[in-house]
Length: 238
Image 1 (cartoon, rainbow, N blue to C red):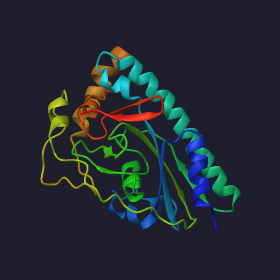
Image 2: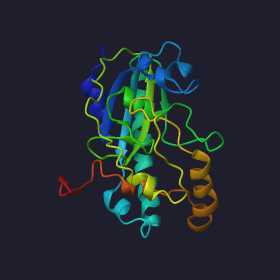
Image 3: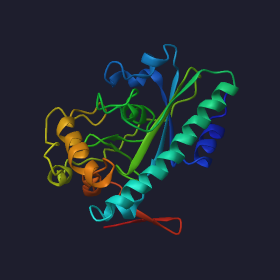
Image 4: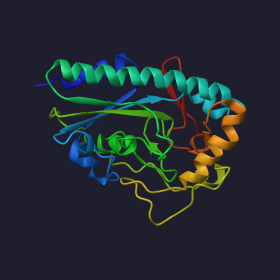
């Protein structure tokens, strides 16, 4: 039997801030082709890992866009290293394990595995109105990755507390109106924003100026998890 605590501690040691375990079939709410068993038919568990985004650079947007990009790149490297290390450990223990690194395929405007659905399945958070994962600890200020394995690891409980109160701050903050209120919004299944508007702004407006396509304004606007870490203590901002 795998030691769940050891896996969690190993992931945190290598750079993950949040780690959750969920049953592979809980990802059946994800779009077809982006579910755990689309890649590993006998998958038993999805392990979701998250690294927090630097709070201060998010709050400083748009003035701190260059710093936001640099900080995200650094956190992404740490997170991807942790994901690969967990997959390697599981294989060394005799299990199949596929690492899904933090990132997006910009041809289809999505990653191979739905990392947000994986995180919901593993109890790390819920979908917000901005269609980002909201976590109790950091709100949407996280980068996500996952490992899909055939190992059967006891699941963490799903998040019960509702985080998104549909305040609409993310709608107002979006510079291209890619987010809107809809009855289709589902905190567990997610929903579709206008990704083409969003990515056109990222690639055609921001990338030429910054050499990168990170916006972050809907993340900054979200009040869930509004906090900053000072000397190891998380201080809630009113």
